[in-house]
Length: 69
Image: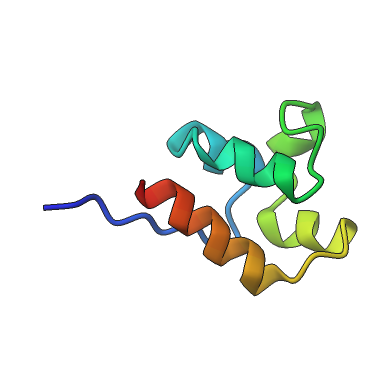
């Protein structure tokens, strides 16, 4: 059975990358060029989307798609 990815807006950026390494490229494509910086340890996906002015739902869809691959 295929692994179900479930990245949520409450997860921190570093948590997402740790669980789903392919998500790092999605973050970079969306302008999160500091995926390894200290802020990523406590910044949630939702906070990052707001900071970078990115549609949260679009970002979550892209992250979950990458995580399922």
